[in-house]
Length: 324
Ligand SMILES: [Zn+2]
Image (cartoon, rainbow, N blue to C red):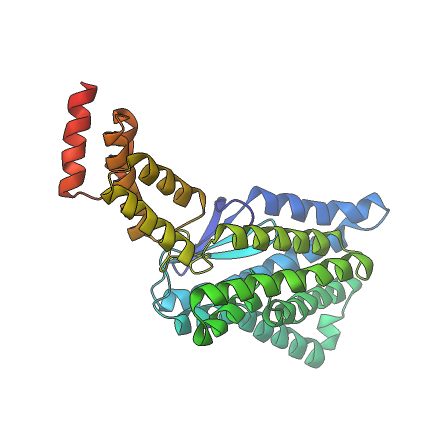
């Protein structure tokens, strides 16, 4: 979520591509080597890394398999702070979206439950050595403990925060749901940072919580949409903020105030992602206003990204004539 969205492709299962980012490799390497620095065993770290990676894959495939059933084109990325299930298309309804989100922690809880049953009914295998006991403990901790935290804490971008946002959308308009979700996330993340640092002595929890606070505050300021945050491509709905700006740009365009139309469109582009249809309109307005301002080469750049229309074609012809 905070980091890069691409990585090294490692395998594909049921048409779902799985990639791993450099950060994931680095953090996992740290978990393996750190205990060794204080005289501990690297094997314990390695067992944790294997358990965490298996658990993340179970969780992300929970999301991805349900997303695939709805035809959303999912792929999985293991990155710095865990996993990410990216979708090529937005869910058609909030109900579908909620099921995709819920399926991740649900898969973890089911898997954790199976591990628990195995350890209960075959203790001679599960606890055969300290290493197998460490492995079982790690699987239970991540799949049960983390799945519950992830599901129940209403903190964006955890699954619980996403479900909280989807539930709010049933009762509120999107802008109110967005604001409440982000404010609650900040409200929850601050004590989480303190507890993580002071009680669990975990820098990672504290850093994660601080990043949540920073990213939620910036999303509140820029008006960035929460809908489609998990999607790699276009967003289904625009934030009110973007809609307001587009209205301003359209008004400036019809007043032939090219400079203002151009400025507002750039402000929209700087304020985060927007739906494809809206972005197409932004390219058109940028192209037309840049043409009128005599910035022909720049205008051509925008016009080529805009969908074909009479006004776009006309502006392209005019720019080409001026540039030649
Ligand atoms: Zn998840």
